[in-house]
Image (cartoon, rainbow, N blue to C red; front, side, top):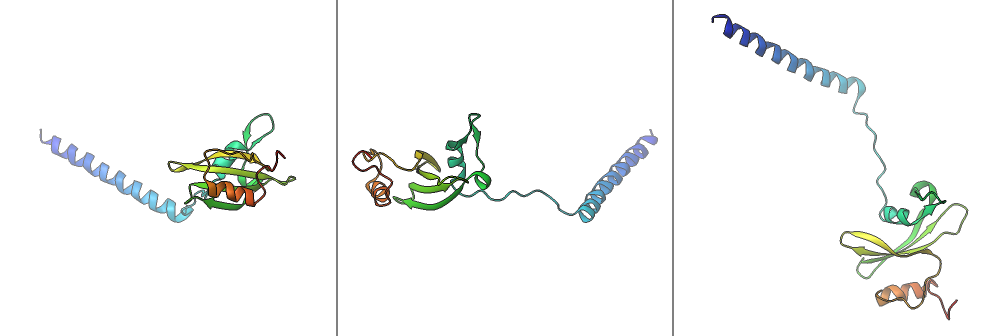
Length: 142
């Protein structure tokens, strides 16, 4: 019975030594290796939604914005509920997409394309006016 407290002290002592060794290992590792980690570039707004509609080839692989297309001329309309964006792809003139904000996210409503139907319904007048002013709506069926 007298040995029981000695064993407990022995195990507590070993436990403390292990904790100290672990902490020392972490400190030494960070100072030797440094805080090296992989950091991805922050995704540009709208790239995810547009990547989902721009498919390459017959395999349906998602395109990568940095390699496969670039956005330009992004125009927010109707209190930022609607977006018109121009995209370009290497070797082509690209096209346009129209997105609508549903909840917290934008969804592609029209596009990709270079010309949209003139008889759009359910789209605010300032959006259709912008599309018309920029030559993105069909005129007389063309």
